[in-house]
Image (cartoon, each protein chain N blue to C red):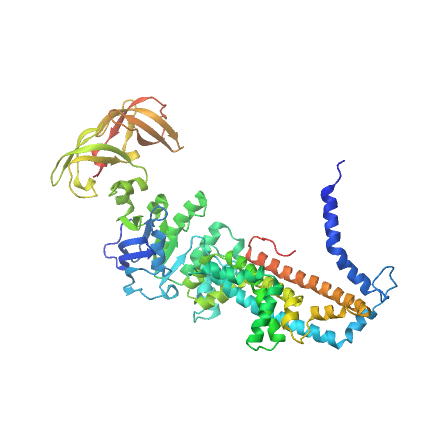
Length: 268
Length: 368
């Protein structure tokens, strides 16, 4: 029998991808302070430690505030841009869309430095608002890319039909377009939320004294005694991510089934 | 078939031009469409028929000219306030709504009570034969059912004009024929002016009171189906609608009541001026057209009622109820097409058979 190269490759790939993720809960429930084998026995104390860590709570609050604001604003901007890109023809459309998408391929550290210079020049205080603006810059191209797909699959005559039946441009958008691109909007919200939540460079450069979750985690790495707590935090974050993704995929599939569209694949 | 003489005009199209940048899509369209008429815009793709329909609906602005609906100039009147409704080629059924919600969509701002609206929806569904389908998801319908939902959705608003953009092109042949008949019945029942865009000449002939044949942004001929078929005013129209044979000929003399011709292979004959629908007077080289069914193969013992010639069968195409022959007529350069209904006592002829063929000068059309 031939050596099963493809199968071995697949398994190695999966191990490489997920072994670190599985290590998280392993050490999170480990009683020992040192992150090393052999394990020292089961314990929930690192999770308990999360509960009364005020600086962590503040970081989580900051990150959630930023991520929610960013996902809503980026998705809204993305809807405008995707709508314009798919429905209207205007001079300089190509270059304009290209420029909007540029942050997607630009090194983030360059963007962050440039933004820092701009904020200092216009005397915008570094902090929450600065991080939000920076994250919008980073997330909007992703939102446009996702929403473009949703708007492209929309039959133009649906809009014309609604308009022909007496609706205005605005009510047509609300009654026909919005419900039909809703799966795309949910995907966009989710992606922007996740990107913002774990974004480090931008938050580090323009955040001033504001601490977000990634910055907090990074700062804790200096103290070996704090590591198991980070493991516990990581475990919770992984579980939350899986839950969030599952909900989004469920909503998307339900939307696809309801409109009878062909399932072109989502996240899962 | 023909328009009622005292019909009142519903749509007047006056010298309408439409440019897309440099492209001249509509080149001076003039037409009057009567109330209650089933009117078709027929032409190959790119002839401007859909553009014209969309200018009537208000989806496209016109560059110059005027469109009047029921006597009112539609300039500056947007599509959502015109007394027209449209059935789209893709049907444009809202996929996230039920059949009922689709049909009742246009009633959203209607001041009637929900119960009265529900009754109107039920009536509209009954009219198109979809009673009991109201709560179905719109995306779960077949092509023919979607078509009916689109019709009910447009007709529930009682528009003055219903615009149909190639509504049957997505259906299979059987379904298309059924829907053609239903559309005709429906139009008679509601009495609304229908304007149909189609590239299918057969569909236009079957359904319409009058047809405007369009080429390259212009109306080439506007007539009732029979006139269009029997007396096309140009070779182009003749070739687009059905099959027409052309043979060269000469005008020998022309008086007010008679045109004398010498037709290749068929010889000298006289025709009426009405048989030269393109008008104008010309002597010399012309071409003469005739439809396949105006030639008849004469079997043993049959005699021609009018004129007779000889030919050789060059091709046989069997269609079940009909047989099409390509016949090389003696003295004519190119074979002509001839159709015969297959009835008992008329065996299908083989290739190469010599046969007598009856023809009639009354069936000729002169093209200059």
